[in-house]
Length: 318
Image (cartoon, rainbow, N blue to C red):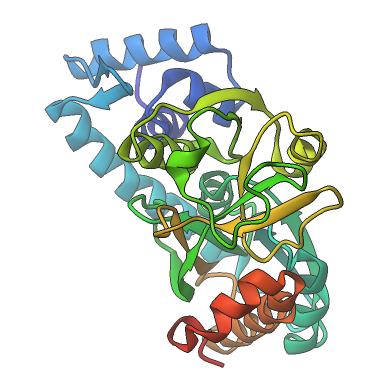
């Protein structure tokens, strides 16, 4: 057996997700098939690429070398086919991805305004990691990514990025009938007995960040529910659980959204795009459109609007 591109993508996916199961889900394979392919690759290269740890799998020294070289190869392959396709034309389609933010309602219009003559398609995805993967594979031209502080999203050439919002706090959503709903901010330690809804996009660090913050506050979160994106809102309203939320979202009926004391959860927004699809001028226009779309919705949550107005240093540069 010879190594080919799909094997390199498999190795990188395992390294990035920290899990054979997670990598299999990302690539649309079964876990047994992924495991069998990994064993065959390890036989070919003459050593183990990954070892199990308490948090999943970690690359061995040999694995780290091969992952680093695989990323270089994949970047060149993706750039090759991107160059053959060429940049988006003046009447082309801009394939845009976005994490699940309140501003998605304005993204298509605002980006369309700054890129006249272009049709904007939009993929909304809770996982920034999956959006970055789609960018690297040429399935998207650009994306707005949310990145949890302390975690990084792998972006490989020809993908480049620019920070939109360097820092913003993650809020907590509670039932309006919750005993803490009247407080202006919530101490994480006061939620130690709550049932939690797992945050979306766990593969990009949101779940690990939640666990780390709760442990720092002296408890292990009871992750009782797994509900993607907004599916957990009725559970919160009914008082069955609490969940972390993007601060720009308005509180749905029956719920309140509050800051966490001390800002234990912080994220940033990053605009990423493929240089082989967008020119510098188009990328600048895209940035302006996304910045305007985001600021359009800051006021949707008055609590976040107060924080935003008090921190002009994080506002987009437009």
